[in-house]
Length: 264
Image (cartoon, rainbow, N blue to C red; front, side, top):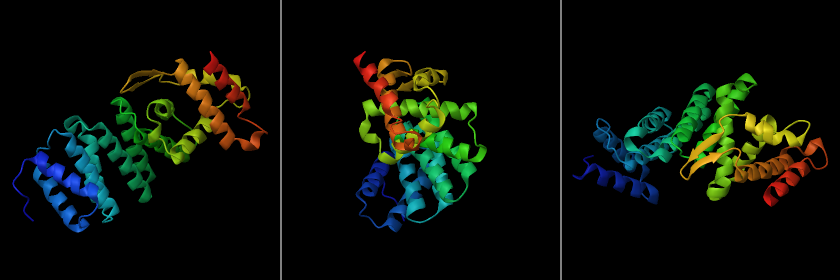
């Protein structure tokens, strides 16, 4: 199937437009995408469209054609080529999708590595999106399922995930869905909330590293007032949801801290 004569950017834009419309024949569109990939992969365009194209092609391979090997190839190409195409969000999405794909294939070690790579790249590039946080949560979940404890690397990944969660609650709350917040809250209860004195929450929080998350809006510090207010808020919400069997109102102390932090 011959591609029309056009600049690579125009071909990528055309593919992405048709893919977004979801009206084209998947077989024909995927065939066009494969041909375009083989035409451009030798010297990938240093354009964001290339990253988004690889994610779209990988998603089609996984969801429409159940071709895990091809999907993995496209996702990894996007993640590993981020310094070329520059679309950080696409790279994180590709890494996260690779993790989901490996979990579906019952390969938790590969899934954990994909999630960790996606989260690490997202945090490194200050790409604080829901998928960056999802990837971090997935890496921590699978690591703990395997080893029943967290090592220093996954503690750092989890602290970054919590920092990202708190920042997104203020900056881009529309990115956060119920399932993601529920899992973040469950991990907060499991690994951070004090077992005895709720007043120890802030010191425990500050003991975990890192203490800063780089975002598109600048540095987000774990000790700044806005961050601590959100921390107390999610602690109250998470305790109410996940610790109901530990007393009549396990969220009460955190609600009091949240209200006091807002006043001060």
